[in-house]
Figure 1 (tube, protein in one colour):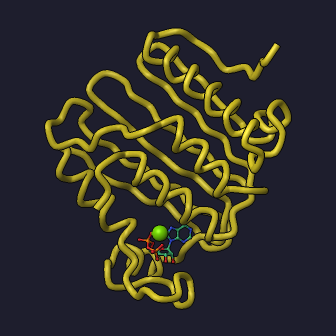
Figure 2 (cartoon, protein in one colour; figure 1 turned 90 degrees about the horizontal axis):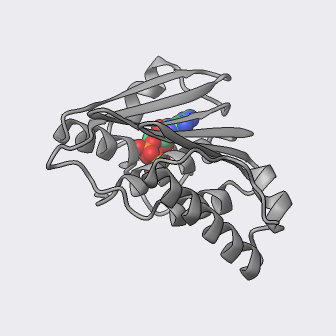
Figure 3 (tube, rainbow, N blue to C red; figure 1 turned 180 degrees about the horizontal axis):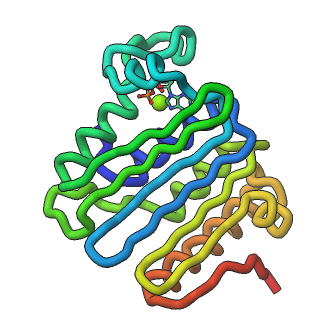
Length: 190
Ligand SMILES: Nc1ncnc2c1ncn2[C@@H]1O[C@H](COP(=O)(O)OP(=O)(O)O)[C@@H](O)[C@H]1O
Ligand SMILES: [Mg+2]
């Protein structure tokens, strides 16, 4: 079980990448009493039967993870959301893509902690590789967005230590500004 929202988020991004998505959009929005996480992809999607199976912890796609036969990502997310006064909604269409939305009560005592948001965005960018990742963060009045192509155009490929450090510092700065309530969203290293 994940102890942070970031852990759950990484699972959703991994699912999207494994579904053959070309574009993945992550939205993390905190407003009033509600925190919403959503991950949308244009991957292979699921029909009604597959969607039902996806929520069964004892079912995972054959061959997807050699060596394990349980798929716990979505069932754990459901459990965590319900324990924190929220819910999960999944919309999916075969051949079109999938959107997973999770809502929790922002100040619920059993809400998982945020986790390392900047580190998770970096991890997601690495996992996504050539997949275009759009990351949108909103916190009350403030917001920022990071697009993978735009970021790597400024830093260089994220398999270089310097690029990783630059990107991490940049995102950590955006997170800080978000928490302080300032608007931001441009990649500018000058
Ligand atoms: N974004 C997605 N697009 C297509 N199929 C998905 C997506 N997310 C989950 N699934 C399907 O639901 C199943 C269960 O997902 P999950 O609970 O994360 O377990 P796991 O990924 O370990 O199999 C996956 O094996 C996959 O078949
Ligand atoms: Mg998974």
